[in-house]
Image (cartoon, rainbow, N blue to C red):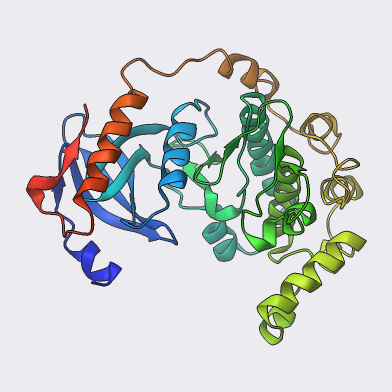
Length: 338
């Protein structure tokens, strides 16, 4: 049965959640807007495909569960619809950054900087907690419009490829999305490992470039259309190693901003700007809210709310879901751990 037909059979009421509308779909599943029928809170539910990689499912759930930060989508609950794990999380009403940039076009420098500041604060928090995200891209950056204010809040999500790397930061898997992948990740096969935190910095640099220019830094859309996938990857890696950034769209961007971009898109990870150096950079500090600098000091003291599902409860739920196998779930098969 196709994924479309399966999702059409999604019940309107799933435990304590009322399914309202589809928000989007991707490689690993669909996201629906839902309402908690007990609290009336509007939330998002990510419904993973039944054949999703179990390791990635558990990594997304258990890593996300530990992260409490204003610029990270809040983890709420895990439920299952038949064999499909469903992750309930905070709803961001502005959609994702990719769709917003596509609709707006290249952003003004001050707009891009405001969102970038929020991204870097979130990444700094993750790294200090020992996690590398490993798939930072506009699709995984949600926007939220707060009533009564004109600014957008940026919130990081999707921790399926995240990894606990502690102090070493070392990883060796070629993971992520090609256009946002650091050169050392793209060329990681057979190596002893790369610094996943430095690779996150590279991805943040590409996100900043995309916000400012509305295109990617190392290959044009025309080239992408006429080259094979293997040739695109080969071309990307060659240009990234040589630092051949397509800088013609940066004509209206300040020199300070270009200096920041070049520091983040440095091909040698040892020479690349660190998160700490980014946060010290003059461009980053323009109009930086006073509370932003102390935010992570406070957030790092927060603990997981005691009412949140415990790891053993979630593991039991996921094991039960695997037992359902490929059967079409019915309303009565919907389970949750409260």
